[in-house]
Amino acid sequence: MKYKAVIFDMDGTLVDTVGDLEIYMNMIFKRYSLPEINSDNINSVTGGTIKDALEAALANIEKNKEKIDLYAQELNEEYLKKPVIKTCIYEGIDILLEKIKQKKIKIAVFSNKDHELVEKTVHTIFGEKMFDFVRGAVEGFPKKPDPAGAFLVAEKLGVTPNETLYIGDSDTDAITANSGGFKFIAALWGYRTKEQIAAAGGEIFISKPLELLDFLE
Image 1: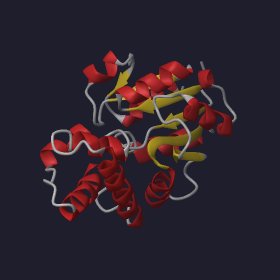
Image 2 (image 1 turned 135 degrees about the horizontal axis):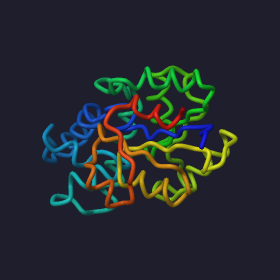
Image 3 (image 1 turned 30 degrees about the horizontal axis):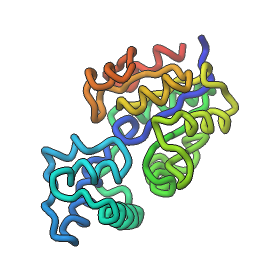
């Protein structure tokens, strides 16, 4: 099968964002006199939406939905001011993207983070012309693992799901891709274990970004 497009998850797939998430989560926690999260625990709450991360970090401390919504809103507002402080590209991703573009294959980013934050992060790190389409979470539109967003990305790229590789590092990505009929490739350099991804239906795993090229020959 010759694929015409690749959809990339962002956090844990293209870029490592745990450093910045830790900065902004602790900014909000300090603001509300909540216990700060440490570097050893940040990976365990990373990979979903910002609200997911907050709920996981505060699981035994705060369960009030209104308060968590407030924290998430304020965290997102602060994060958006400067989304790239410690965030960095995973080794090999820049070369991978250039090689895919040389093949005239379309590339997109699809994330559960707020759309404006995703767009600003991607454009800050990769520039505005690297990806053919960038999509984050939009209020009122289903988030992953609902495949609706992935269908929208494919439509914008002018391809069908079976013409598209979907690469992500989480169980959520595995469910999204498989339920939408996309070919899923699991990135093992991200935030979830092979066991977690496999339990959600992941079957093909790569340990380094350039291994993705084996599926694009």
